[in-house]
Image 1 (cartoon, one colour):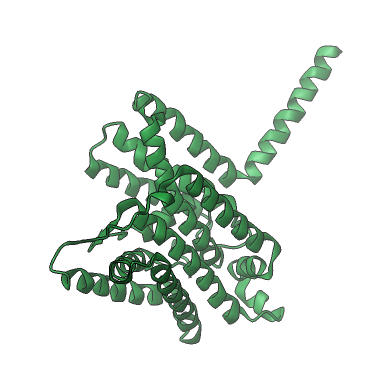
Image 2 (spheres, helix red, strand yellow):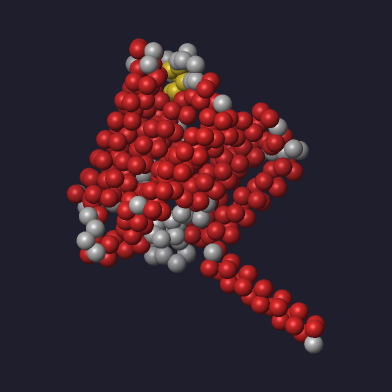
Length: 330
């Protein structure tokens, strides 16, 4: 009798676990992916993954991806995307360098960059709504525009790289990086879960028509969402410049796809909606940075690293959209 009771209890526990996993497939998969990366790269790198130097490099990389991804959360929650973020960050880094070299003021450079990110966010959101264009169209326009500006800015110097002697060492201190991540994540968590901004952006992603019929000014909140993304892009650009101290024609060019991949690795559905969560940006950014860093430490050729990322991107996108009519968001 006692054995029967134990067997019945075990079946109940197994059933509860199975039910939870089925209802939280993306959550379980994202955490499992992170743990798998930690185990695999710890072994294949012969422990170098946890060296003091590599941990600091990994932390600096995670900081930029995580801050930008946290901002992108508002846009992706609506089922939209912004593929111009990489080109924008490249221009912002160059602009900060020019201002710092001319005036010696980092604060002025960051303020100008912040204003530009807010204006670009407002433009991206408003034009897409007013002209009834898919978000990818306006972001494509900004990507080409900023790509051209970035090229002209570098060419005007007569060199392929523009640098500054400004001391960014304070921004590379581990406690500053961790504090910045915590503060940005805390603010985004509050806005996303306890304010209208998070509620309405998720509502737009779940069903924009229903959200509008409930009396929500969807145009207004789309613009605000893109502007919130812009603020995080500005902060991320500052930490990116602090890492390199220079910028060129290709600076940050891959960040648009990197941020997208980081989010979907964290379990973010490209269709947006109520399944969008802050942890998608946190877990996904760490997983992506770990993947990039671990592959190189494990001796994988640089060309193959990009190939592996492309394969992972296709697999995750297809799996995350398997019940949808299309692969790309609106």
